[in-house]
Length: 465
Figure (cartoon, rainbow, N blue to C red):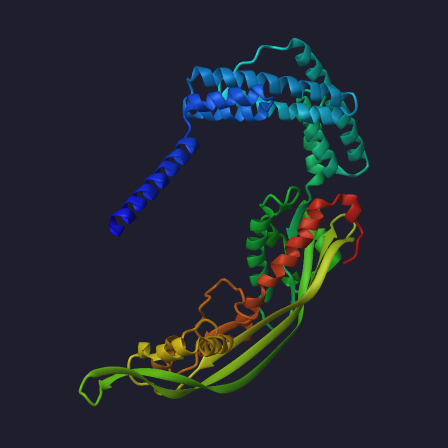
């Protein structure tokens, strides 16, 4: 009897939950007529925006639903009247603000067209709106013209653009817009950095990579007024004999020959490296299978150790660059700093028998019994060996007895793990290691160009780094 009662209670509970889910789905998936009804109710309560959105949802579900169309037309007409009153009231205080609100009203009109909602014409407001936009176009045009005369073409460009939005045919606003953009857009040439280090290819390799990186960055939305001249044009204009000693005056002359407005000139200097060796003993566990006293096959882990040799190389090289105005050779902006790169290599020549996958840093039973110890072992290995696995190290020791290094990071030139790259075998040479530092230069260069992009010509001219 008790089982029957439990079954009945279970049935009633399941039925109740099923009805609740069905009701929730019905509410969330209300049909067009239901949404239209909700729109009418919201409108009667003065919730016009809600009424508009409910009717819009209904029309998205059923574009030909007459009730929904009528509800949306009713709500849209009221919203239009409210916005017309707002724009007229705003115009009495701030013509430009009223003009911007009028432009926003165009988005509402376009949305109504998409739903094929047609409101009755309002000639009086159309006339007032046209006058407001014309007046706003005149105000912003005059402000832009004044800014252009005061040496602020970037601000002038934005204002001419706004004037053009208010009234595209206002005076010569289209021509002025192009003029402001031309004056605001500095043509920038990145000249090869002078190489005052012992690494012969450093300057050329840096310039090649720099053009690729900076071109990609300056094409983003963060840059509106930067035109980086093509690399090929710059290389053709710079004599090889001048690559290692480009001064400001020479750089400015080359910039004028390139029809550039600004040139970036810089140098690498003071490179230093240090190399250290070391070693550590790593406990390891090897999985083996044998038979117990009863003759059954068992799996167990036998502890051992391997000697791991380490080699660390650190490199620093100074850099500095200046953005030079080609007309007078003055420094517009600049920066300087030190590039740092570090490489850590691990290698073992210890003979290790058996399948490499049978080796681990800590056996499963110990890992389960003492997770904190397992976490510490894994962390300690990561500090010493990066993301190389124990099996990677063993394979490397078997395949190559020489210490030629193997990079996991290929050619992305970025540092990994505590600002150092970790290799198997040996560390890279100085020339290869300095590539790992290149990625640090793009950020200050990008920030400097971004500052130049956002500043008016006269506000940055003559500044020292």
